[in-house]
Image 1 (cartoon, rainbow, N blue to C red):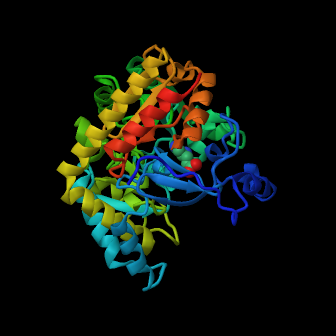
Image 2: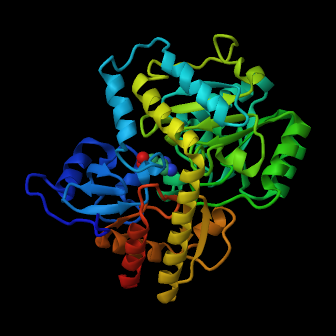
Image 3: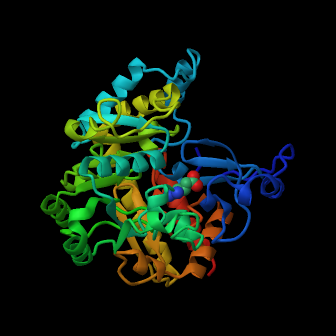
Length: 437
Ligand code: HOZ
Protein backbone atom coordinates (compact mmCIF):
# COMPACT_ATOMS: atom_id res chain seq x y z
CA UNK A 1 0.00 0.00 0.00
CA UNK A 2 1.27 3.48 -0.80
CA UNK A 3 2.21 5.59 2.20
CA UNK A 4 0.50 8.65 0.81
CA UNK A 5 -2.82 9.20 2.59
CA UNK A 6 -5.80 9.63 0.21
CA UNK A 7 -7.59 12.92 -0.21
CA UNK A 8 -10.97 12.40 -1.86
CA UNK A 9 -13.91 14.61 -1.01
CA UNK A 10 -17.03 12.58 -0.42
CA UNK A 11 -20.09 14.57 -1.43
CA UNK A 12 -22.48 12.39 0.58
CA UNK A 13 -21.02 13.58 3.88
CA UNK A 14 -21.88 16.96 5.43
CA UNK A 15 -18.15 17.37 6.11
CA UNK A 16 -16.16 18.25 9.21
CA UNK A 17 -17.16 21.91 9.48
CA UNK A 18 -20.90 21.34 9.03
CA UNK A 19 -20.81 18.52 11.59
CA UNK A 20 -18.88 20.69 14.04
CA UNK A 21 -21.41 23.53 13.62
CA UNK A 22 -24.28 21.12 14.32
CA UNK A 23 -22.43 19.40 17.16
CA UNK A 24 -21.79 22.70 18.95
CA UNK A 25 -25.54 23.26 19.16
CA UNK A 26 -26.07 19.88 20.76
CA UNK A 27 -22.94 18.88 22.67
CA UNK A 28 -20.89 21.30 24.83
CA UNK A 29 -18.06 22.51 22.60
CA UNK A 30 -19.21 20.02 19.97
CA UNK A 31 -17.23 17.18 21.57
CA UNK A 32 -17.55 14.54 24.25
CA UNK A 33 -14.03 14.99 25.60
CA UNK A 34 -12.46 18.46 25.61
CA UNK A 35 -9.10 17.99 23.87
CA UNK A 36 -10.91 16.83 20.73
CA UNK A 37 -12.33 20.33 20.22
CA UNK A 38 -8.98 21.67 18.89
CA UNK A 39 -9.35 24.44 21.52
CA UNK A 40 -5.66 25.18 21.90
CA UNK A 41 -4.70 24.76 18.23
CA UNK A 42 -7.76 26.35 16.64
CA UNK A 43 -9.53 25.16 13.51
CA UNK A 44 -12.08 22.45 12.87
CA UNK A 45 -11.88 19.09 14.61
CA UNK A 46 -11.74 16.17 12.21
CA UNK A 47 -14.86 14.02 12.52
CA UNK A 48 -13.69 10.48 11.94
CA UNK A 49 -15.71 8.23 9.68
CA UNK A 50 -13.52 5.16 9.82
CA UNK A 51 -10.06 3.90 10.62
CA UNK A 52 -7.92 0.98 9.49
CA UNK A 53 -4.33 0.13 10.39
CA UNK A 54 -2.44 3.38 10.97
CA UNK A 55 -4.90 5.50 8.96
CA UNK A 56 -8.00 7.44 9.87
CA UNK A 57 -10.48 8.87 7.38
CA UNK A 58 -12.40 12.06 8.14
CA UNK A 59 -15.83 13.29 7.01
CA UNK A 60 -14.25 15.48 4.31
CA UNK A 61 -12.87 12.27 2.75
CA UNK A 62 -9.28 13.04 3.77
CA UNK A 63 -7.04 10.33 5.14
CA UNK A 64 -4.33 10.77 7.77
CA UNK A 65 -1.52 8.66 9.15
CA UNK A 66 -2.54 8.64 12.78
CA UNK A 67 -0.24 8.96 15.80
CA UNK A 68 -3.07 9.39 18.32
CA UNK A 69 -4.30 5.79 18.11
CA UNK A 70 -7.47 6.61 20.09
CA UNK A 71 -5.12 8.11 22.71
CA UNK A 72 -3.26 4.85 23.17
CA UNK A 73 -5.28 1.64 22.81
CA UNK A 74 -4.58 0.94 19.13
CA UNK A 75 -1.18 -0.66 19.61
CA UNK A 76 -1.85 -3.16 16.77
CA UNK A 77 -3.49 -0.50 14.60
CA UNK A 78 -7.13 0.42 14.06
CA UNK A 79 -9.80 -2.18 13.27
CA UNK A 80 -7.42 -5.08 13.74
CA UNK A 81 -9.08 -8.26 12.39
CA UNK A 82 -8.49 -10.30 15.57
CA UNK A 83 -10.07 -7.65 17.76
CA UNK A 84 -13.03 -7.19 15.40
CA UNK A 85 -13.59 -10.93 15.30
CA UNK A 86 -13.50 -11.14 19.12
CA UNK A 87 -16.07 -8.36 19.42
CA UNK A 88 -18.44 -9.59 16.73
CA UNK A 89 -18.36 -13.23 17.77
CA UNK A 90 -19.16 -12.14 21.33
CA UNK A 91 -21.87 -9.63 20.42
CA UNK A 92 -24.14 -12.25 18.85
CA UNK A 93 -24.47 -13.86 22.29
CA UNK A 94 -25.58 -10.66 24.00
CA UNK A 95 -23.96 -7.33 24.83
CA UNK A 96 -24.41 -6.99 28.60
CA UNK A 97 -25.71 -9.24 31.35
CA UNK A 98 -24.93 -7.47 34.61
CA UNK A 99 -23.76 -10.87 35.83
CA UNK A 100 -20.34 -12.54 35.91
CA UNK A 101 -18.95 -14.28 32.82
CA UNK A 102 -16.23 -16.83 32.09
CA UNK A 103 -14.43 -14.22 29.99
CA UNK A 104 -14.01 -11.93 33.02
CA UNK A 105 -12.16 -14.73 34.78
CA UNK A 106 -9.98 -15.20 31.71
CA UNK A 107 -9.01 -11.54 31.46
CA UNK A 108 -8.30 -11.38 35.20
CA UNK A 109 -5.95 -14.36 34.72
CA UNK A 110 -4.20 -12.58 31.84
CA UNK A 111 -3.78 -9.38 33.87
CA UNK A 112 -2.45 -11.27 36.88
CA UNK A 113 -0.05 -13.16 34.62
CA UNK A 114 1.24 -10.06 32.83
CA UNK A 115 1.26 -7.27 35.44
CA UNK A 116 4.03 -8.01 37.95
CA UNK A 117 2.29 -6.52 41.03
CA UNK A 118 -1.20 -7.94 40.30
CA UNK A 119 -2.73 -10.86 42.17
CA UNK A 120 -6.32 -9.75 41.67
CA UNK A 121 -8.11 -7.36 39.32
CA UNK A 122 -11.39 -5.42 39.48
CA UNK A 123 -12.79 -4.28 36.12
CA UNK A 124 -14.39 -0.86 35.58
CA UNK A 125 -15.73 0.90 32.49
CA UNK A 126 -13.01 3.56 32.14
CA UNK A 127 -9.62 4.64 33.41
CA UNK A 128 -11.29 7.47 35.32
CA UNK A 129 -13.41 4.97 37.27
CA UNK A 130 -10.33 2.87 37.92
CA UNK A 131 -8.35 5.75 39.46
CA UNK A 132 -11.33 6.97 41.51
CA UNK A 133 -11.79 3.45 42.84
CA UNK A 134 -8.08 3.00 43.54
CA UNK A 135 -8.05 6.22 45.58
CA UNK A 136 -11.08 5.11 47.59
CA UNK A 137 -9.42 1.73 48.13
CA UNK A 138 -6.16 3.33 49.31
CA UNK A 139 -8.10 5.56 51.70
CA UNK A 140 -10.18 2.62 52.93
CA UNK A 141 -7.10 0.45 53.54
CA UNK A 142 -5.07 3.12 55.32
CA UNK A 143 -7.88 5.05 57.01
CA UNK A 144 -6.18 8.25 55.78
CA UNK A 145 -7.58 11.07 53.66
CA UNK A 146 -4.71 12.96 52.00
CA UNK A 147 -2.92 11.84 48.87
CA UNK A 148 -0.13 13.20 46.70
CA UNK A 149 -0.26 13.65 42.95
CA UNK A 150 2.09 15.39 40.53
CA UNK A 151 1.59 18.61 38.64
CA UNK A 152 0.70 17.83 35.02
CA UNK A 153 -0.13 14.18 35.71
CA UNK A 154 -3.67 13.29 34.75
CA UNK A 155 -5.64 10.53 36.42
CA UNK A 156 -9.02 11.00 34.78
CA UNK A 157 -11.68 13.47 35.77
CA UNK A 158 -12.59 12.36 39.30
CA UNK A 159 -12.94 15.38 41.60
CA UNK A 160 -9.87 14.63 43.70
CA UNK A 161 -7.61 14.45 40.65
CA UNK A 162 -8.62 17.71 39.01
CA UNK A 163 -6.02 19.66 40.91
CA UNK A 164 -2.99 20.74 38.83
CA UNK A 165 -4.06 18.17 36.23
CA UNK A 166 -2.51 17.63 32.81
CA UNK A 167 -4.11 16.54 29.52
CA UNK A 168 -7.26 18.45 28.51
CA UNK A 169 -7.44 20.24 31.86
CA UNK A 170 -4.04 21.85 31.21
CA UNK A 171 -4.72 22.25 27.49
CA UNK A 172 -7.84 24.30 28.18
CA UNK A 173 -6.24 26.32 30.97
CA UNK A 174 -8.16 24.85 33.91
CA UNK A 175 -5.73 22.47 35.57
CA UNK A 176 -7.74 22.85 38.79
CA UNK A 177 -11.40 22.61 37.88
CA UNK A 178 -14.24 24.75 39.22
CA UNK A 179 -16.92 22.45 40.65
CA UNK A 180 -14.46 20.57 42.83
CA UNK A 181 -15.33 21.54 46.42
CA UNK A 182 -12.47 23.23 48.24
CA UNK A 183 -12.76 20.64 51.00
CA UNK A 184 -12.07 17.90 48.42
CA UNK A 185 -9.26 19.77 46.66
CA UNK A 186 -7.59 20.42 50.04
CA UNK A 187 -7.07 16.68 50.44
CA UNK A 188 -4.97 16.58 47.25
CA UNK A 189 -1.32 17.51 47.80
CA UNK A 190 0.68 18.40 44.72
CA UNK A 191 4.39 18.15 43.94
CA UNK A 192 6.33 18.74 40.71
CA UNK A 193 6.94 15.52 38.74
CA UNK A 194 10.47 14.18 39.15
CA UNK A 195 11.07 16.30 42.27
CA UNK A 196 11.77 13.84 45.06
CA UNK A 197 12.83 16.59 47.48
CA UNK A 198 9.38 18.19 47.21
CA UNK A 199 7.71 14.84 47.95
CA UNK A 200 10.06 14.24 50.89
CA UNK A 201 9.02 17.60 52.34
CA UNK A 202 5.32 16.82 51.92
CA UNK A 203 5.77 13.41 53.50
CA UNK A 204 7.81 14.84 56.37
CA UNK A 205 4.94 17.18 57.16
CA UNK A 206 1.89 15.04 56.30
CA UNK A 207 3.17 11.46 55.88
CA UNK A 208 1.04 9.91 58.61
CA UNK A 209 -2.11 11.28 56.92
CA UNK A 210 -1.13 10.37 53.34
CA UNK A 211 -3.11 7.40 52.02
CA UNK A 212 -1.28 7.18 48.70
CA UNK A 213 1.08 8.67 46.19
CA UNK A 214 -0.46 8.53 42.73
CA UNK A 215 1.88 8.77 39.78
CA UNK A 216 2.00 8.06 36.07
CA UNK A 217 5.31 6.16 36.15
CA UNK A 218 6.06 7.61 32.72
CA UNK A 219 4.02 10.79 32.47
CA UNK A 220 1.92 10.97 29.32
CA UNK A 221 -0.42 13.86 29.92
CA UNK A 222 2.12 16.72 29.83
CA UNK A 223 3.57 15.27 26.68
CA UNK A 224 5.68 12.19 27.35
CA UNK A 225 8.03 12.76 30.31
CA UNK A 226 9.99 9.79 31.69
CA UNK A 227 10.95 9.57 35.36
CA UNK A 228 14.49 10.70 36.22
CA UNK A 229 16.79 8.09 37.79
CA UNK A 230 15.83 7.40 41.39
CA UNK A 231 12.48 9.23 41.35
CA UNK A 232 10.14 6.22 41.39
CA UNK A 233 12.52 4.29 43.66
CA UNK A 234 12.39 7.27 46.03
CA UNK A 235 8.58 7.30 45.99
CA UNK A 236 8.55 3.58 46.74
CA UNK A 237 10.85 4.13 49.73
CA UNK A 238 8.84 7.07 51.06
CA UNK A 239 5.60 5.10 50.83
CA UNK A 240 7.19 2.19 52.72
CA UNK A 241 8.55 4.50 55.41
CA UNK A 242 5.22 6.25 55.96
CA UNK A 243 2.78 3.37 55.46
CA UNK A 244 1.28 5.01 52.36
CA UNK A 245 0.36 3.12 49.19
CA UNK A 246 2.20 3.71 45.93
CA UNK A 247 -0.32 3.76 43.08
CA UNK A 248 0.92 3.56 39.48
CA UNK A 249 -1.56 4.97 37.02
CA UNK A 250 -0.73 2.81 34.02
CA UNK A 251 -3.82 3.69 32.03
CA UNK A 252 -1.50 4.99 29.32
CA UNK A 253 1.67 2.97 29.89
CA UNK A 254 -0.01 -0.38 30.68
CA UNK A 255 1.02 -2.92 27.98
CA UNK A 256 2.22 0.05 25.89
CA UNK A 257 5.81 0.39 27.04
CA UNK A 258 6.28 -3.34 27.69
CA UNK A 259 4.08 -6.43 28.07
CA UNK A 260 4.69 -6.07 31.83
CA UNK A 261 3.72 -2.37 31.74
CA UNK A 262 5.99 0.41 33.08
CA UNK A 263 6.42 -1.40 36.40
CA UNK A 264 7.99 -4.39 34.63
CA UNK A 265 10.13 -2.21 32.40
CA UNK A 266 11.40 -0.04 35.25
CA UNK A 267 11.54 -2.73 37.92
CA UNK A 268 9.47 -0.91 40.56
CA UNK A 269 6.58 -2.61 42.33
CA UNK A 270 3.60 -0.40 43.13
CA UNK A 271 0.95 -1.34 45.69
CA UNK A 272 -1.95 -0.69 43.35
CA UNK A 273 -2.09 -0.23 39.58
CA UNK A 274 -4.74 1.29 37.38
CA UNK A 275 -5.09 0.27 33.74
CA UNK A 276 -7.22 1.42 30.81
CA UNK A 277 -6.91 1.96 27.06
CA UNK A 278 -4.97 -1.12 25.80
CA UNK A 279 -6.48 -3.43 28.45
CA UNK A 280 -9.90 -2.98 26.80
CA UNK A 281 -8.59 -3.47 23.25
CA UNK A 282 -10.07 -0.11 22.19
CA UNK A 283 -13.40 -0.73 23.96
CA UNK A 284 -14.35 1.06 27.21
CA UNK A 285 -12.60 -0.59 30.13
CA UNK A 286 -10.48 0.22 33.16
CA UNK A 287 -8.89 -1.98 35.82
CA UNK A 288 -7.64 -1.67 39.38
CA UNK A 289 -5.23 -4.44 40.29
CA UNK A 290 -2.86 -5.31 43.09
CA UNK A 291 -2.09 -7.88 45.76
CA UNK A 292 -4.92 -9.91 47.31
CA UNK A 293 -4.55 -8.43 50.77
CA UNK A 294 -5.31 -4.97 49.35
CA UNK A 295 -7.79 -5.92 46.64
CA UNK A 296 -9.98 -7.89 49.03
CA UNK A 297 -10.84 -4.64 50.79
CA UNK A 298 -13.14 -4.01 47.80
CA UNK A 299 -16.78 -4.91 48.36
CA UNK A 300 -18.15 -7.59 48.65
CA UNK A 301 -15.16 -9.25 50.42
CA UNK A 302 -14.32 -5.93 52.07
CA UNK A 303 -16.22 -2.79 52.80
CA UNK A 304 -14.79 -0.32 50.24
CA UNK A 305 -17.73 0.07 47.89
CA UNK A 306 -17.15 -0.03 44.15
CA UNK A 307 -19.60 -1.16 41.47
CA UNK A 308 -20.86 -0.77 37.88
CA UNK A 309 -23.62 -2.21 35.72
CA UNK A 310 -21.34 -2.28 32.68
CA UNK A 311 -18.20 -3.33 34.58
CA UNK A 312 -16.74 -6.40 32.89
CA UNK A 313 -18.84 -5.72 29.80
CA UNK A 314 -18.57 -8.77 27.51
CA UNK A 315 -17.57 -6.82 24.39
CA UNK A 316 -14.83 -4.87 26.16
CA UNK A 317 -13.56 -8.01 27.85
CA UNK A 318 -13.52 -9.93 24.56
CA UNK A 319 -11.54 -7.17 22.84
CA UNK A 320 -9.17 -6.95 25.82
CA UNK A 321 -8.55 -10.69 25.89
CA UNK A 322 -7.81 -10.81 22.16
CA UNK A 323 -5.34 -7.94 22.43
CA UNK A 324 -3.58 -9.07 25.61
CA UNK A 325 -3.24 -12.63 24.30
CA UNK A 326 -1.67 -11.35 21.11
CA UNK A 327 0.70 -9.04 23.01
CA UNK A 328 1.71 -11.87 25.34
CA UNK A 329 2.14 -14.52 22.63
CA UNK A 330 4.23 -12.39 20.28
CA UNK A 331 5.72 -9.99 22.78
CA UNK A 332 9.32 -10.17 21.62
CA UNK A 333 8.51 -9.50 18.00
CA UNK A 334 5.81 -6.91 18.70
CA UNK A 335 7.74 -4.78 21.17
CA UNK A 336 11.01 -4.90 19.27
CA UNK A 337 9.26 -3.89 16.03
CA UNK A 338 7.48 -1.07 17.85
CA UNK A 339 10.78 0.04 19.28
CA UNK A 340 12.53 0.05 15.90
CA UNK A 341 9.73 1.96 14.16
CA UNK A 342 9.54 4.45 16.99
CA UNK A 343 13.29 5.01 16.89
CA UNK A 344 13.03 5.51 13.12
CA UNK A 345 10.31 8.10 13.76
CA UNK A 346 12.48 9.83 16.35
CA UNK A 347 15.54 9.98 14.09
CA UNK A 348 13.68 11.07 10.95
CA UNK A 349 11.48 13.66 12.67
CA UNK A 350 14.50 15.04 14.51
CA UNK A 351 16.46 15.35 11.27
CA UNK A 352 13.49 17.02 9.55
CA UNK A 353 13.04 19.52 12.39
CA UNK A 354 16.81 20.16 12.51
CA UNK A 355 16.71 20.90 8.77
CA UNK A 356 14.25 23.71 9.58
CA UNK A 357 16.53 24.85 12.43
CA UNK A 358 13.72 24.34 14.95
CA UNK A 359 14.89 23.81 18.53
CA UNK A 360 13.09 20.92 20.13
CA UNK A 361 13.51 18.18 22.66
CA UNK A 362 12.22 14.71 22.35
CA UNK A 363 11.30 11.86 24.68
CA UNK A 364 10.54 8.31 23.74
CA UNK A 365 9.82 5.24 25.82
CA UNK A 366 9.09 2.33 23.51
CA UNK A 367 6.29 3.41 21.19
CA UNK A 368 5.17 6.37 23.34
CA UNK A 369 6.72 9.72 22.45
CA UNK A 370 6.67 13.40 23.31
CA UNK A 371 7.94 16.29 21.22
CA UNK A 372 8.49 19.69 22.85
CA UNK A 373 9.34 22.85 20.97
CA UNK A 374 12.03 23.92 23.38
CA UNK A 375 15.73 23.18 23.39
CA UNK A 376 15.64 22.93 27.21
CA UNK A 377 15.37 19.69 29.10
CA UNK A 378 11.79 18.79 30.03
CA UNK A 379 11.41 16.92 33.29
CA UNK A 380 8.17 18.35 34.67
CA UNK A 381 5.04 20.30 33.82
CA UNK A 382 6.64 23.75 34.18
CA UNK A 383 9.33 22.75 31.68
CA UNK A 384 6.70 21.35 29.30
CA UNK A 385 4.68 24.57 29.58
CA UNK A 386 7.70 26.59 28.37
CA UNK A 387 7.53 24.96 24.93
CA UNK A 388 6.59 27.25 22.02
CA UNK A 389 2.80 26.95 21.60
CA UNK A 390 2.67 28.94 18.36
CA UNK A 391 5.22 26.66 16.77
CA UNK A 392 3.23 23.65 17.92
CA UNK A 393 0.09 25.06 16.28
CA UNK A 394 1.86 25.57 12.93
CA UNK A 395 3.40 22.12 13.18
CA UNK A 396 0.08 20.51 14.04
CA UNK A 397 -1.88 22.17 11.22
CA UNK A 398 0.96 21.79 8.73
CA UNK A 399 1.06 18.06 9.41
CA UNK A 400 -2.72 17.74 9.16
CA UNK A 401 -2.64 19.40 5.76
CA UNK A 402 -0.02 16.87 4.68
CA UNK A 403 -2.15 13.96 5.93
CA UNK A 404 -0.51 13.30 9.30
CA UNK A 405 -2.51 13.46 12.55
CA UNK A 406 -0.96 14.05 15.96
CA UNK A 407 -2.85 14.98 19.15
CA UNK A 408 -4.28 18.53 19.05
CA UNK A 409 -2.38 19.54 22.19
CA UNK A 410 1.28 19.76 23.12
CA UNK A 411 0.35 18.19 26.49
CA UNK A 412 -0.41 14.79 24.97
CA UNK A 413 1.86 11.89 24.11
CA UNK A 414 2.03 10.33 20.65
CA UNK A 415 1.82 6.62 19.87
CA UNK A 416 3.34 4.44 17.17
CA UNK A 417 1.46 1.24 16.33
CA UNK A 418 2.46 -2.01 14.75
CA UNK A 419 0.50 -0.91 11.68
CA UNK A 420 2.89 2.00 10.99
CA UNK A 421 5.23 0.70 8.32
CA UNK A 422 8.69 2.04 7.75
CA UNK A 423 7.35 3.74 4.59
CA UNK A 424 4.53 5.38 6.54
CA UNK A 425 7.05 6.80 8.98
CA UNK A 426 9.34 8.04 6.19
CA UNK A 427 6.32 9.70 4.59
CA UNK A 428 5.53 11.59 7.81
CA UNK A 429 9.13 12.81 8.10
CA UNK A 430 9.04 13.99 4.49
CA UNK A 431 5.82 15.81 5.38
CA UNK A 432 7.67 17.64 8.16
CA UNK A 433 10.41 18.52 5.66
CA UNK A 434 7.80 20.23 3.46
CA UNK A 435 6.33 22.39 6.24
CA UNK A 436 6.84 26.13 6.27
CA UNK A 437 7.29 27.83 9.60
N1 HOZ B 1 -7.64 12.72 28.18
C1 HOZ B 1 -7.37 12.00 27.00
C2 HOZ B 1 -5.95 12.03 26.61
N2 HOZ B 1 -5.01 12.01 27.63
C3 HOZ B 1 -8.20 12.47 25.84
C4 HOZ B 1 -9.37 11.61 25.71
C5 HOZ B 1 -10.22 11.85 24.47
O1 HOZ B 1 -10.43 12.98 24.08
O2 HOZ B 1 -10.69 10.88 23.96
